[in-house]
Length: 378
Image: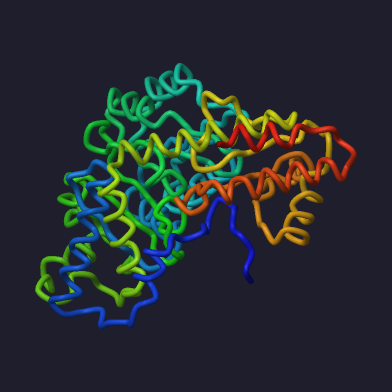
């Protein structure tokens, strides 16, 4: 179990975060841990450009998505923007909570057509728009800021699956008018999995007490009530994995020290270098570079070799794991390299993947410029 994880989550975790996670378990209540929790949620809100509230909900990123569905989709007219596997997921979640859900489907690998989005909003009378910021299934970065502006123009709330973009891509909730963001710990925040991270605008938190409950665990009103009622020692309704809170706090501390703008720029630099290396080997991106995500690269083999066979070779011969396609029709032609954590982004790890890719292509009697590809990374 010592493979190098170069998949788009869970990620290789930096040593400082592992050290925080591996410390002795502490009680999930009391003034000291309360202070750590409050500091962590406030840091998370700041990193996302929000003056609202964040909640650490034990579970996966889908827990935060489900919280959006149960709190804000019920009886609402919802528009889901969908151009990938995880667009399918939020459509399924929203449809469990409302009978008035429509989805606007775009071709996989293509960004949203904003003129089409606006036409739907103009005519549809939607209460909310829900989109995926980075869909890891195809490595695409969707235009969050632009969609949020359109939604606000037509008085619709905006919710975002940012599970694969938080801590990597630019997100500014207050400035862009975003109402709710779902995140997870095991991607851009470089921690082990275990929390669904939900960040909400002040307005939604204020509205929580007026919303009829249809849940308990995921009811925002319950979490807000416990924050006020037990704030001195236990401002959340359930037991929290304390080691993961410590790890997340350390991650957010490192992000704030680096500066979110610097961090976003660093991920863009890594992405550009990986793209250069891949193209030097005669391959290409599955999506146009103009809308490529910066925490992973989805590569098309251009049918020069079988992607699934390469993934198996990489694990067997080099002990490196990368991601395959989530679409059965693309399993033979698309693979995904994760560079979501700062540890994944280390030159030695990026070179290991590109070097192994070049070796496999040579093994398949494909002429490649391995030295040029590795030089493109540096």
